[in-house]
Amino acid sequence: MDKDLRVGFIGAGHIANKMATTIKKLPGFCNYAVASRSKEKAESFKGKYGFIKTYSSYEDMLKDEDVDLVYIATPHSLHYEQMLLCLKYKKPVLCEKSITTSLKDTQDIYSKFEKENVFISEALWTSFMPSREIINDLLYNKKKIGNIKYMNAAFKVPLMHKERVTSRALGGGVLMDIGIYPVTFVFRTLGFNYTSYDINKIEYKNGVDIKEVLTFNYENGVKGICDVDGTSKLSLKVTIYGDKGRISIDMVNCPNIICVYNKIGLLTKIIYCRPKYGGFEYELIAAKKAIQDKKYETTEWSHNDSIAMSKIVEDIFNSPKAIE
Image 1 (tube, rainbow, N blue to C red):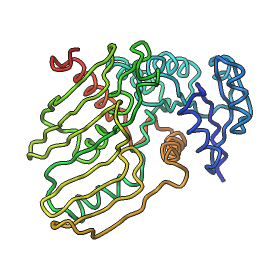
Image 2: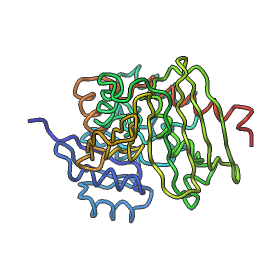
Image 3: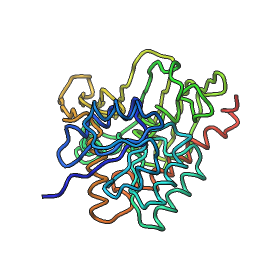
Image 4: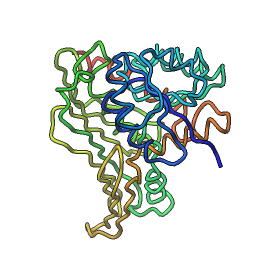
């Protein structure tokens, strides 16, 4: 039997709590170490989730030979520097999205890890869900809704009280924080080979983007629309429209229910796909497999996929339409 993969955490904030909760339940993984600049925070985190060790220095944790995988759960602006530190000690990395704040840094960090053949992945959990295979099978193998015409993917949630979103210094803004989910969903459904995109709407407040509507156009006329809003009531729904019906998905970031409707709007199929441990387990399992296979990336979300995402985010912010 494989030994448990011992995970070391850099950061002990909100998203780290979710990951630690998952690992605590997930067979084959161990909440091993947590490093935080606040000793009190690290000790509290250790007690809550059953960690074995705490460190007040990231580098001290990385010197621990028993750390098998480092999970980085800090603001975007700190990721690049922290990943470089992990590479210094040849530690495999699972880094929260967005992996960096620029295309240049994303390309550079992957290149450096690949050169050393050390595993690294962006922890974009949406791409690791088994529901992705279910959705693509319904669309492309079984053709349940015929030919795809367009799709809408939304992520709307009130976030303007979160410093990670409102602070430019931390790499804030909703596109990099939540917009990455609907954009990824569109790409994984329709492909990365869009021919053009339109910025239908973009709004800023205090130097960070707070909402946008984006449309990705494909050569066959299909459109993928992403609606992102950090000031709105909760809405995470995806709808994919075809010439013979539609598919509705309850949550863009973590699908639980997939509903298929025929051309006249009658419900013909319901698929329940709620993750057993919350959803983060799939990226952990993929990371463990890649590390065991001595690969530097996962098949579910490759380095090229992540770079493509980083590029479109940068392109959007550099577009004349996106100038504040």
